[in-house]
Image 1 (cartoon, rainbow, N blue to C red):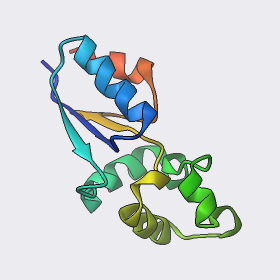
Image 2 (image 1 turned 180 degrees about the vertical axis):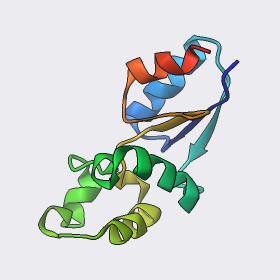
Image 3 (image 1 turned 120 degrees about the vertical axis):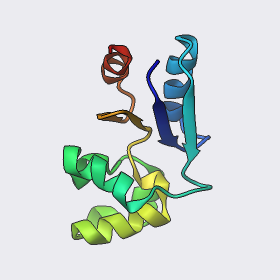
Length: 116
């Protein structure tokens, strides 16, 4: 049985889709509500190392526009600081199962996490 962690926020459609995906398949998962508990820097680094910081940012999210980020040129460390303050800037959910990770709504990656 895979050990799955879902990082997201309760009011995110994609986060709820990930929870439903694993629940429908009888897979227990740990949900980390990023509004309640921010991701540890090492955990964020795991996703950044695999996908790059720009892939983690959701430029379509209201928080991105509200903060005027489309007009700013930020360094990776500045992005990380903003992500730590506002999880809504991330393409949610971030899902991890062992060494397999995914960002955003990604049924294909989630299915691959179920294969031993």
